[in-house]
Length: 73
Image (cartoon, rainbow, N blue to C red; front, side, top):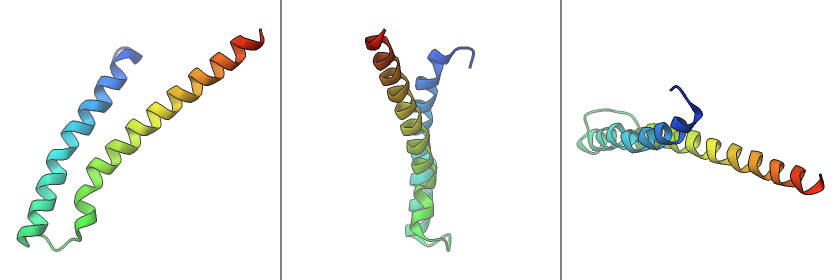
């Protein structure tokens, strides 16, 4: 990534692409191929949601802080 403008696109693509291993893991669990519990199958998608949510929360906090600081000036 060369600029911060590419971060949202990267995080959204990470979220979309995380559905592939989650789906495959869930299908493997349904078929009985792997002896792990099903919550582990959604770990890639949960991780992607966490990173995207953290980025959005940080952006909202930074924007709110900027707006609050500019009102008092």
